Each structure stands twice: as C-alpha cells, then as structure tokens.
Length: 146
Image 1 (cartoon, rainbow, N blue to C red):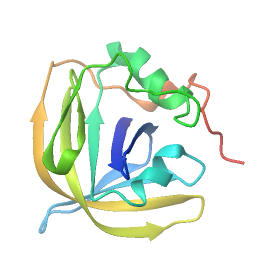
Image 2 (cartoon, rainbow, N blue to C red; image 1 turned 180 degrees about the vertical axis):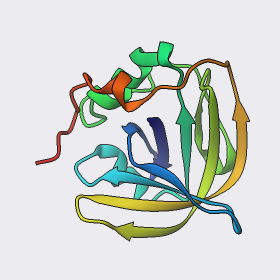
Image 3 (cartoon, rainbow, N blue to C red; image 1 turned 30 degrees about the vertical axis):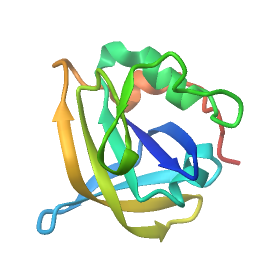
Image 4 (cartoon, helix red, strand yellow; image 1 turned 90 degrees about the horizontal axis):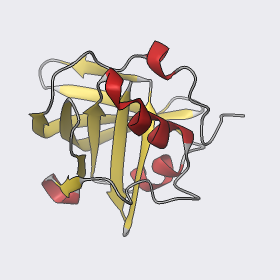
C-alpha cells in the first residue's frame, strides 16, 4: 500500500493506493493506478508529476486519512507536515520512502487509470515494517467504486 499525492491547477490531492508496481528496469518506470471515482484521479489527470509514498505499519492513521476520507469534502493536508519537491510535487514528511515521478504515460484500465512514472527525485525516512493490504483492509474507502 502507498499514498500517492498530486498537484495541478491550484489543487492538491492524495489517496491510498493498492495497485502499484515497477514496470521497467531500463528505463526505470513505475506505475500507480488511480480510481476514476477519486478526487485524486481528477487532479492527477492534469499533474506533471505524482509522488509515491511508502508508509510503515505504525502510520495507519495517515493511511486511514488518505484512504478513508475524500478530498471532495476535506483538505487532507491540513495539519500535516509536508514539503514541495520537484515541479511543486507534495512530499509527506515521515514516509518510510518516497519518490516523485514525472508522468510519461496514462493507461485506461477500466475503473482505474495507470500513471506510468519516471522517477526524478527520491528519499527515505524512518525504518519499520511497511504497511500492507492486510493492515489497511478495515479502512472504508472515501470514494467506493460502484
């Protein structure tokens, strides 16, 4: 599980993502799949970059915020510590690891759209066991897929 953040058109957004994977070694590429129902998807459609954050298991509250709330109703970033990265991307402080990726391709996969990213900036934070699907299974989606 990871949190993906996006910035475009003066809006910022972020969501908990379960569909993500490395897709190429040379050139390095990673894909994240965003639900078309999510506010984050609507912002990401126009974003030049996305940031992918890995969380530790003790960051379930952060996962719950980004997975169980919707940016259509609240500002998920209010009260959080974050900073700007490459091209204005949002980097959440305290993530176990993160990277900013330039969007090089978008793929419609049905109810999700894949965003293929070229990593351009990265870093790491505290060590610890990473958040898994089994750790987040009780989070009720802020925007359930119909």
